[in-house]
Length: 243
Ligand code: APR
Image 1 (spheres, rainbow, N blue to C red):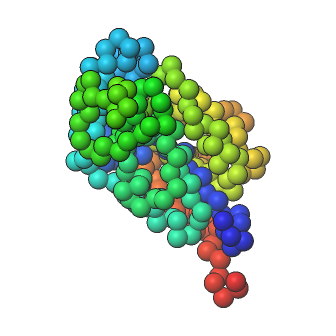
Image 2 (image 1 turned 90 degrees about the vertical axis):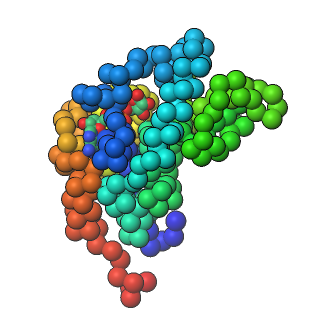
C-alpha cells in the first residue's frame, strides 16, 4: 500500500447473503440449505468420515450450480470500489463470485468450491474448476482427495490472517452474514476502536451491544449502492493534483 491509500483500507466481511441475489441459497434463512440438508451430514469432518460419498456428491452439486450463476450488483460494486479504496474481502463463502466480479484481494475463510486437496497434506491443493470430483479419486501421490472446504469440527487456518486484516481496517463493512458461526463472527472484535463500520442485511442481525455499526437494512445489491454513496461522501477520493 502506498501513502495515498493511508486511511483508505476498506475491509469487508461477507457471508452467504452476499451471493443470494445471484441465486445461491443462504444457510439459515427460511428455505436455506440447512433446512434441506443436515449440516452435520454434509458439512462436518465427522460427516466426511461417516459418508464421504454423500459429501462428495453434495459439493459436486454446489460446484455444478456455481458454474451457472453470475456475480450480482453487490459483488460488482465491491470490485469497483478498488478504484477508490484498498479493499480486502474476508469471505465465508466458498463460491468464486467476488473474484469473477473482479475483486483482487479475497481471503476465503471456509475454503473454495473450485478446489480439492489431498486428505493427508492440506498444502496439496488443486484447482478443478467446475468439474466433478469423483469419490475415490486420488492425488498424484496416491492420497485420497477431498473438497477444499473448511468443515465444522476443523480449524480455520486463515483466521489469524483475517484477524490482521480486520485490525488494520480504516473502514469496515459486514454484508450478508448472520454472524452465527465462529471464529468468523468474532472478527468484528478485532476492529480498532472508532473504526467506521457498516452492516448490510435485509434482516436483523444480532450485533454486540456496544457496537457502533451503521445498519443498512437492504439486500446486498441495493445495500452496496447505498454504502458506496455513504463512502464517497465520507471519504472523497483524493484529488490527484495534490499528489
Ligand atoms: N442480501 C444480503 N443479505 C442477505 C440477503 C440478501 N439478498 N438475503 C439474506 N441475507 C442475509 C440473511 O438475513 C442472513 O443474515 O444473509 C445472512 C445469511 O446467513 P447464513 O445463512 O447464516 O450464512 P453465513 O452467515 O454466511 O453462514 C456462515 O455457516 O454453514 C456455515 O460454512 C457455512 O460459511 C457458512 C457459515
